[in-house]
Every structure is written in structure tokens, then in C-alpha cells.
Image (cartoon, rainbow, N blue to C red; front, side):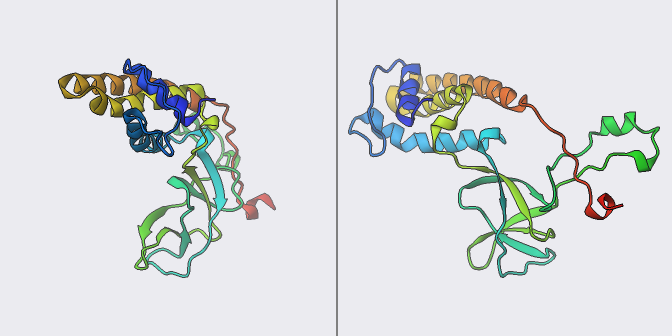
Length: 223
């Protein structure tokens, strides 16, 4: 897959710039490399935050903190590379999917005892403690977190994500490289293409096979 530098060169080509930079960390010395060094990490973070990408989603057992924040029973440390939290889970949960309302309606004729049991994520909030540390607050003991992680290895990016990122970088480079009204117009054009390609990338990622594993409450499972 494309490297950081290759993505930046692709972004420059979207603008009609023929420069071929060789390094952005540190920047090689050209104006294009300097701009890419400044904008590329921001664009990459924005792309990852834009969707719960399967290739950036992680699961981790959270580390308890010695802190009490009412009305929450437990406080946990935030993972170092977390971009955003998706769900707080019971440690015995296989997944965090619920039964769609349509399914419940279609199955309304079944006795309640026949209804499949689905696990719902636990409520949580993320707050900054008085110590300055960010904490995940929840009532779930021994909580497990599904979250989106900051991925810097672009080898893990699918082709559509790479292309979307290149157009987002191009939208940021347009002003400094082209300047004036033309630069502003080009930035707007690149941002529009980015949104279109991002939609394609999100659609492709969301269509990955999904196993709707239901969480069975332990005491029921033993019956």
C-alpha cells in the first residue's frame, strides 16, 4: 500500500503540482514537503475519526483508575492511541449488537421466552478528572472497550481510504500552493471529491461480513 510520502505526492498531483517529495518527517526542504509535513498528520487523523473503520477498530480490557465520579461506579484510563470510543462492553460479551426493531416486530408472534437475547453496550461518558487525566466513566465492572485507534501505518489503509486521504490532503495544500481565489476554489473542489470518495470507502467498509453474535447472560445460559 501507499506510504505517507506517496500519499502526499498523490495529493500534489491532484493539484497539478509535478513535485516529487521524498520525505515529510523530517521535511526534505522543499515548500511542498513543508506543507505536507504540517497538514498530512491532521488529515490522516480526520479521516480515521470520520468512521468506525474495521481496520482501525480495536478491543481492550480497560485499566481501572483510583477515582470516583458520581453517579458512575467505575473510572478507567483511556487507551493511549484512542481516537474515539465506540462501545463499553461486559467482559463476557461476544459483541455489542442489538436486535433490529424490524426483527422484533416480525417475531412479535413468538412467546417472550423464545426471543433471542441481544447484548447492548453499557452507558459511558469520557471526562477529564481533576488530575488532568481523561477517564472513561461507566457502571460496568471489568469493562472492555471497543474503540477507533490512531493508525499511522498506511499499509493497513485500504485503497479507497488511501485515495480519500490524498484528496483531503490536497484540499489543505491547495491554498498554500496555488494561493488566492484560484487556490480557494481548488480547495473546495478537492474537498468535494474527498467527501465523494470517503462515502465510497465508508460504504465498502460497512459492507464487510458482520456476525450478529448475541450475548447470553451467564445465569440464563446455565439454565
